Image (cartoon, rainbow, N blue to C red; front, side, top):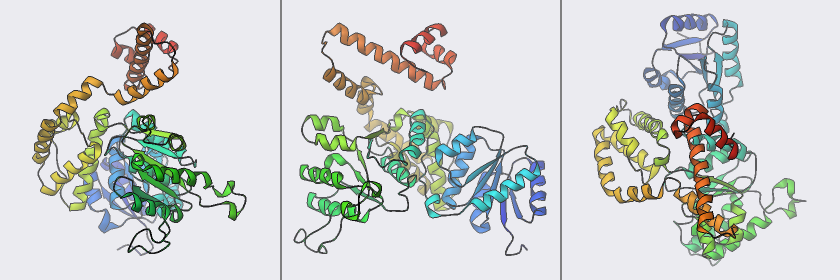
Length: 468
C-alpha cells in the first residue's frame, strides 16, 4: 500500500514493453504507477484513483485531443504529460489553451523524462483561473483562426462583436476571450437583450433606482458596477431599444481603465464589452434601427462564427466530444456510431448548429439508442429541405457576399454592368483560390489540381491576388 506522501501517476501507453519499462522507472523514482493500455479503461478509473499526474504516450493528435477533453470533464485541473514524436503537438496545445498539458520527446533519456515529470508536478498550480478555460472543439480553418485569435484578443481591452447564427458558440467564444485575459479573476456577467423587457434590461445593466420596479431593492447596482474589472457580455445586442443604446454610448464614453484615469474621481468603472448578434447590424444601421455611433464603438474587433454546415470537418470531433461528455455524466458505456450514421451527420443541414448537435447526441445517450439519432435527423431533413435549397442557391458565403456588395456600392462611382461583373468575377476567383489553398493546407500543387488549372497558372494568380 502506498504511503500518503507518495504521488500517484497514471500511465497510459499501448506498447507493452514501453509501458512496463516506464512503470519500473516510475516505481524506482518513488512514484506509485497505475498502468492502462487504452483510453476508455484509463478514464473510467481516474476518479477512484485520484492521481497526481497522467502520462500518455503513443497517441495520435486526434486521439490525444479527445483524451484531453475527456480528462478535463472528469477532473479539470489534472496535469497531463504527453510523450510524443509529433512536433505539431505544441501548436495544438497552445491553440486549444490546454494549460495543464506538457510535452516530452518520445526517445528522451530517462533523466529527461524524470525531469519533465517533476517539472510538470511542481509547475502545476491548480488555480481555478487556469483550470476553467472553455473547451472549443474544431480544427477547421475558420475555427483554428478564431482559436488562434483568442489569446491575442485577451491582451486588449477593446470591444468585441461576435456575429453568427444561433447555436454557433458565440457565448463560448466570449467566455474564452475573458478567461484568456487579465480580467479573468474578475466577473464575466451575461445578459440576453431579447429575453428581458426594456425596463428590466435597463435595471440589469445600469442598476435600479426608485420607483423603477416594484419588489426590486432600491438603488440596486447593475451589471456595469458589479463587473468592475471584468467583462460584460451582451447577447443579441441588436435588440437593445434606442434609449438604452444611447445610455450605453454615454457609459462607454466615461468608462476608463485604471491606467487611463487620472485619479479615482476620474474613473467610473473599468470593464470590457463583448456583444453578440444573429442579425446583420449593418442593415439595422442603414434602416435607422441601430445607432451608427454605437455600432462603430462595438465593431472594433469582429469575429464571425461560421454555421456548422460550413465546417463539416468539425462535426465528427464535436459528436465524439458530446458522446463522451454525456456518457461520462450518465455513467453509460460509450455510444457507438456506424459509418452510415456518421455520414448522415455530415450531410445534415444543422439549422440550429452545434446546439442542435449537442441536444441530439444527449437525447440518444439518455435513451441508450443510437438509432434515435437517425430518426431525429430524418425528421429534421424533411423540415429543413426548403432552407437547404435556398442556401444552395445563395452559396456558402452569401452573408459575407451581401455585405461586400453593399460596401462596393457605397464606394464605387462606376455603375456599368461590365465593370461590376468583372470586379466580382475577380473577387470570386480570389475567394475560390484561397479556399482551395486552405483545403490543400497551402500545398500549391495539390491546390492547382483541385482548381483544375496548371501549377504555373496558380502561381501567377497567387501573385496577382497577393496570396502568400
